[in-house]
Image (cartoon, rainbow, N blue to C red; front, side, top):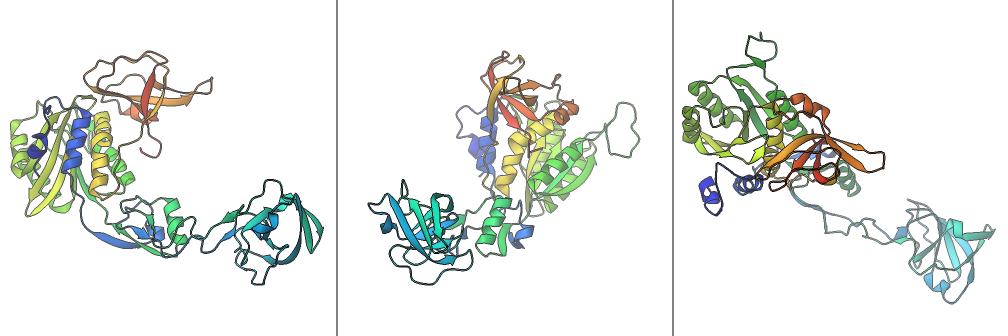
Length: 425
């Protein structure tokens, strides 16, 4: 499906004034996951995308067992009694089951996790009993009911059920769950390979002399960090001059060696027409002006070269705009491309400690500092000047304040949506 086929179904589509939500939906419809997987040990699989559903080969737990230290007994012994005396006939330990027979008015000392002896269905906690002797206990029945403090076979996970679904990005808890099922290896999606480069004659790489009017290229390092956090392999192709032949050669090389290409700079309205014509000649590329600040100009689509193709994200050149555009457009798309269960980043609602000017008709992203206020509630304030070239503001911030498309100015004390950086940047 071509981009124009997707946008043709949007009655209010306007490439020169696209909302954030419209752009996200177009990208979502256009992206198709890559194929390819590999088998890894559990220690290697952290952060990787699960390639197939994990079906539990066993019941977890494998047997009915005790949820706490106490005494296992027949539930029917509780009937109609206020106080109960039981004879202790054995002990059940975790990993060492009691295999004897338990009659009425008998019980077994049991530890947490130990298999419940045959016929026992209830555990009275250790702290509820009065020990008469090593072989007899007494306790008040009280609110103890049949089945209390028992974990049933397969209660956590039944044999044949899905333990973890395809597309999950594996967490430490997932590794523990897989280990509990006795699975030493797991099939995961192959890593995405993402090519990055910056465009602009004014840019210099680290180590080069900084002439008047030039700046060091920071965007490649920011993109490298964000992509590495996302679990991608990064192909850094450096700084590319504003020359159509060099740009086309670099674009083709990136396409032939990567699944996706992310560039910074060279996609604004004022850029030379030959750049657009070249990119459109190479594939299915759309140029958008998105109703957001920062990050208005953006190009998106697919590049083709020598029978290979790669998705393309042309981000703005300003450092903050690069980060904002990446997290609102490229990040979820790349997760979708790698076969992950891609979902929008979660927002939380907190009170703003400062007034924020905002006009309706565009989404505005402010860099913020989230902190606990004296009244015990979370509050957020801006980092100060919000220019899209002030990368220091992103370093100082611990969140982004997201002001929605139709939202107006915010007064101190008003509630705003916040995107946390913790674990993201």
